[in-house]
Image 1: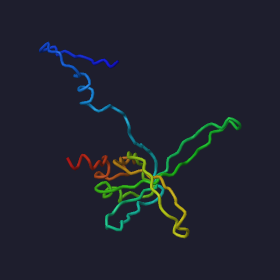
Image 2 (image 1 turned 120 degrees about the horizontal axis):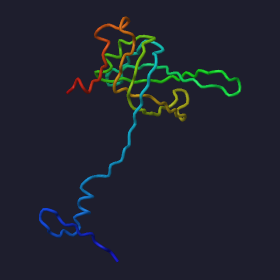
Image 3 (image 1 turned 30 degrees about the vertical axis):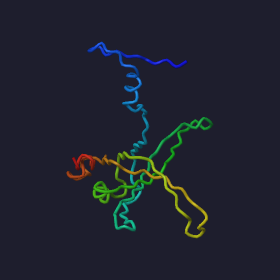
Image 4 (image 1 turned 90 degrees about the horizontal axis):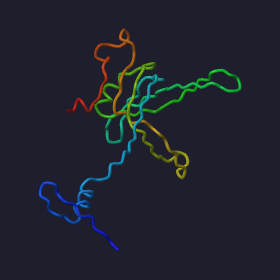
Length: 160
């Protein structure tokens, strides 16, 4: 047996069959799905400026992050360095192209993957994971950074 929820409006005291269902369907469910990456590290080499087949330029950064843990057997701390490939597009790439080896950065973005075929073996596919940067903050000390490079660059704020 199906039952129907009847909702009354407080203002008009009118019975509205199915109003609760209409109200529930008016708003989509609130799922919190996100793909956010925040990294703090040092660049391993100067920024590489590249161009796509469509003549659109982008910048590739190599960012090193480091973690450490205590080895239970030797009771000593072990450092582990992880290298991240960071891709920078659009206006943010104009800022990123000036970055040099050893720059201390905070990078926010999203993790993306892509597949490509091996050049020698066409039937072999490779998958690579990259961080597509949405903002970059230069963390170098004030005496090292220039005045125009000291602030965070976020292209979304520039466009507004």
